[in-house]
Length: 300
Image (cartoon, rainbow, N blue to C red; front, side, top):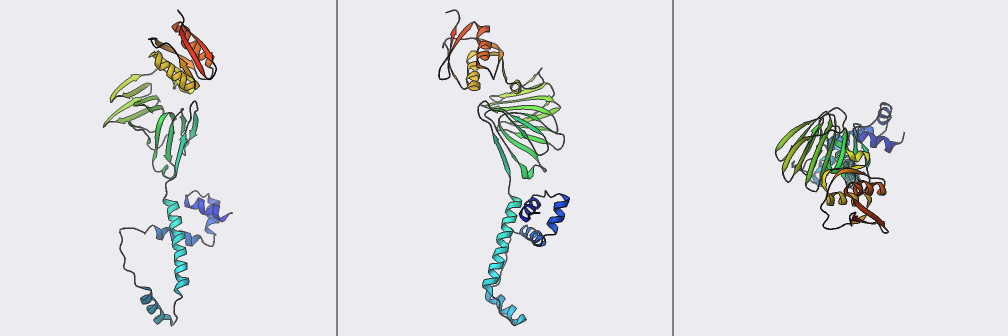
């Protein structure tokens, strides 16, 4: 097998039984292991007194009767330390995986433990692969749906709070000063502002402007997984902003249009989406060139 391939897999502790035998058979295998062990002893807090080259040369010369070629010796030692430092750095460095989604883009991410994350649009997810076996934790900005495999504690960190579970399905939204968590299966714990709350399946929690509210949910998964935006007595302005974001369009509508909307629109057909929000409110619309939509009051 390829030597470089075996060394890389050995450093990440990812050798199969067959590969482990092949690595042990390498001529330099013992040296690699020794370098790693010695490198772990390095510490900036340890002071050592080292004799001068002249003193060492004198001692060695008196024992062997031969003078040391220090140029060759230093070159050899330096080479070993360079390799050792490189291996030590490779073993101890963090390996951060980062995922970002663009507008109207979702991405499914499979984590090292086979847990899955469906990352919603305009979101970011980060986790450390080199420490995943020790700590299942990740950082989220935006929104994501998690299907977590049972095992060690699983933490989702956001700027507003942390969601902790052992194995369940839940959704986390953390954006624009709003923090929302919905549990669809199992049990989750939400920690925020030195407080904590447990959410069983079928419940949700929202933190807005420092105030936390717990509520019940009747759905089995977030609407955005089905490419839908759902509203409950929302302002028409909020509906328009969501429509503009999903379809990358600009909507013009009367400034004095103070309506409330309860309903939904789909994400993959602009015509149907406009019908969904305009007909219930007795509005009309015109799709103009250059991604412009004009909405008017149907009574005019």
